[in-house]
Amino acid sequence: MFTVLIVDDNPINLKTLILTLQNDGYQLHSAQSGKDALALIPQINPDIILLDVRMPIMSGFEVCKKLKESEATANIPIIFLSALDEDVNKVQGLSIGGNDYITKPFSPEEVSARIHVHLMLHAKQKELESLRRQDQQYFEQINAIRDGILDQMRHDVKSPLASIKASAYLIKQRTRDYADAHITEYVERINCAVDETLQMLEHLLELAKLETGRSTHAQLIKLDPFIKNVVFAYRTLAETKGIQFLTAFQIQPDINAYFDPDQIQSVIGNLLSNAIKYTAPNGKISLKVYLANGAIHIEVADTGRGIPKDSLPKIFDRLYRVPMDGEQVEGTGLGLYIVKTIIEQHGGTIQVQSELHKGSTFLVAIPHRQIAEV
Image (cartoon, rainbow, N blue to C red; front, side, top):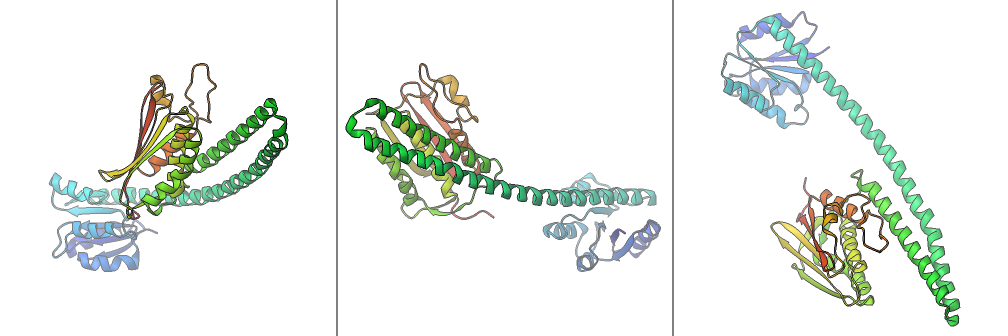
């Protein structure tokens, strides 16, 4: 049985509406003021409210606003009743959350029909919400199982790959006195294949979580030391390759930011590793970090081989790899797609500027949130 609350300061109107609805099988309640209605609603939990607009002390519009401010009552359908027939009042009533507007004098058939329609709609909405919650619980269970499988797969694949790499190292050590160029080449190929497989594995696992939107765990991070710690390993890698590595950290040491550290580390790492990979010895890489216009800006520039003009619109696409004349296409085609996905999940943007054979610059902007947004 549906519960209907009628709110009107005029006793005659109340009686008329009760007589109109008493044979429709509803449980009827009434109140003669907005204050009385607000006190009664938590006790009866109505399925729909018929609400007079013009009442002393607290109008129907004011009552509606208070109901919509509370999570417990925000979804109760409200039908306004008023002798006013001006469009501006109808618009105001609907704009603050009312579901319908009936002008007095009204016919009993119209009132019954409109109440029935809104009760059926509300019942369907509640049914759909219940189904949505069930689906959400189901998918959370499925995702938990999948995450467990992915984590197990990471362990099961990494262990034999680590053994392969360790064996390759031992072969290299034991045969270094032979000075056999072929063995050295074979060992390097093994190492490269293992590294590429590990990179592909990490990309696939990260992508699996990103595309469900479940992997972002933001926290308050001190920005300057975080960036410097991330950069340290890549500076060493660049210098080993004979590449000049320049940095410009234009941020105060005590600046905090709210983001997922693992994901932003992945963003910077992907951009720097790509810059190192595609920049020849004696080239140059630069990293610039600064705050501007409420955003953290990260710019990674290199003097590498650049990106063909027709490839620029596609480089952030899933599985796209930039073709190079006469060279094998490197990478998984997932790195920059993951970078873009992470940045967008943080509410940021990424752009690229590049000229073939002259280098590329990636420009990242992430909103500078110093506290968690509720």
